[in-house]
Image 1: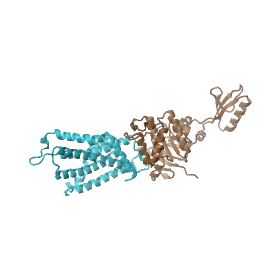
Image 2: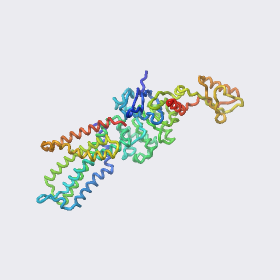
Image 3: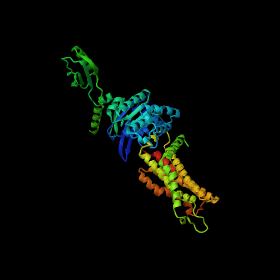
Image 4: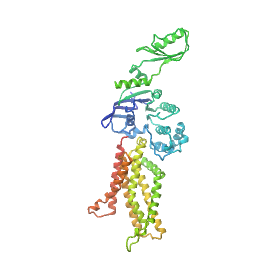
Length: 311
Length: 229
């Protein structure tokens, strides 16, 4: 059996007797992108801070590649790149000097720093600001700088608290692209976000935290099944025949001309239904441009989860 | 000294050297003190018949010995609280270094900067005396040296206390008040044995000051290591 890279077992943290995170357990496999979502105050940041070693007083056990984040702190930290929710740098520093100092403390040699810092600044479109004082940067630029410092030592695990916050759409897309690249190179990513569509875009698995408890984690499709959310098929026809109906297959929601979404009843064989739709369309003289299972809607899933949590 | 501490000390020194606070400490304050010396009436420095009037060197030594501890404590505590509040340390603590290295680096750099500031002030005093034609006697040099050594220990003690106050305080105002009321007064502690009848031995007092400095600084390091973010 493969040991997961991140193992969180029974994590419990309370502030002044008020539990913020209660008995949270989850594993993250190596090379996985794990999205961590939940409403405000659910305990996401606390969990990530425990992993990053910023909170060391808690119950439970948290390990990274077998290294306990409290007892074997330095070993665990050497493997982690962390982006806090609010990134602070010393005001007198320039962008370049901030990265150089943090890179050196992470154990990156001066030769590698000289190579990687300009590369990453270029990638995040911050090259022009490299001599600027950190205090002169905009919120989005500071967030990018925070991301660069987390990536600089090419960690095995990236722990990112709201990494997409404050970034404009092109920068969000760029970050998603970089995270996928890192994943291909074997990096594991744990990130929290409020922007559910972004989580949907990049996460292999999602953990939902509500009121300090995480009882649900899995791929989006697994979560949909667990929550009893219906499966849906999207059909787009290039030629729409006069007599064609899918009403017997499920509830049909017509969209633009030629496009419709079919919500399948529980227990339907999806593959068989898609086959039936194709056969029926061709037999009626129609032509199909696209057909497939609709992507799960994380917003709906999240709403369901929060509703159940409160019930 | 570990690699991380060396690196952090170098960085802190660069940071302080670039800050306006150092310009004030190294140049503006000594010059203002010297101006005060020249602006005060000569009678203010009269020490009675047969005793030469107070020299600029002695005056500067007096001024800096009375403020250097407070300056050091304020400088380090305000710096730590402000960086804590701006979440600067989160990016340092997550690195594979011992967290107390950050506080030791702060201590060493503030101590060095304030000491340099005081030496600058004394040198300005000596230079002023030289140009005024006051001879630098052996006694004067010995007194200046002794005052300097004592001042270095006071600065170290106050810097450690300031670091401790900075680590435990959440607000700058609280840190400032604690420094004003507490840190400077700590300089009295090494003198306590003298008040109980023990002979005043310069080096005994300095050893006690060193031990107390180390204990406070170790305490600050432990508190910083245990801090939750």
